[in-house]
Length: 332
Image 1: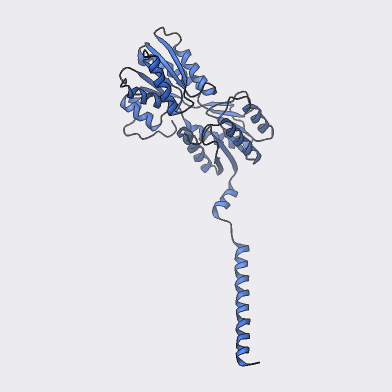
Image 2: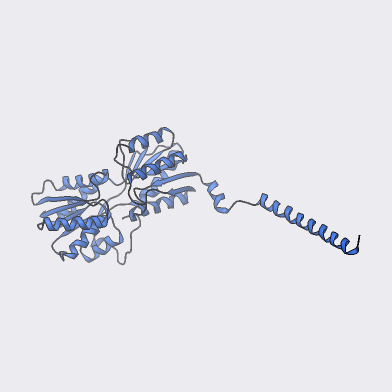
């Protein structure tokens, strides 16, 4: 064998040995490599909860989510915030079913009034997964607890505020988010009961916005065309008062028409500061989300929780707004 052949042979053997060494080294690194920190943290979470709103893209429910995430972080809970992008009953039910199929440790969801909702919740609870309703109750289901506004009382407060602010003299139009949803119906009924003994106040129209700002604008515009005698509006969902305010400004009737809305979004604050909206009903969504997570942990630990917890509700007017306030955490 020539010297050149021997040299090539030796170089080949060396390359082979080096390649094998690298293979063994990196093979060992792969086997002993630790999982990413995030995955390690997931494994350390005490529980896995799901929060399911009526629609994800909703400023109010983002505040509920914010409260729930604050509690989840404090108590080492994995929290998923998931549901229909926009309000859709079937998608809402499917999200609940998928969460139950994934065997999560607890489901927190906005209650629905449809007949299909309660049987689904009942089946899930019977399988050992606790369910808490948030913001809107489903009292006829087997949900273990409800936390949120007393919606009848909040409507009643709105009625009493309107009486005080209009000196008991008003032709009222109501824009409600939905004719079918429990919390919206309760707000309307509370309002009606508050003003029923006032001879100077009458309701001349009730329209549905489908919890849409554009729809609220359209319905308010229609009402003012058909009922020019209207001197006051009550909007029962967060976007209703904003839609009404836009119409009132369009017709330049800010000084003639009184508006009481619901919740405290940034635009609601803007219209209150301008004087277009005179009052709004304030809820506590941040607190709802935070306390819902705490209640779910207590249920998982075998503790008893109240079946109903009503969070605070109050009327807010321009004088109640702090200077330069951009938003109030925990209210919509």
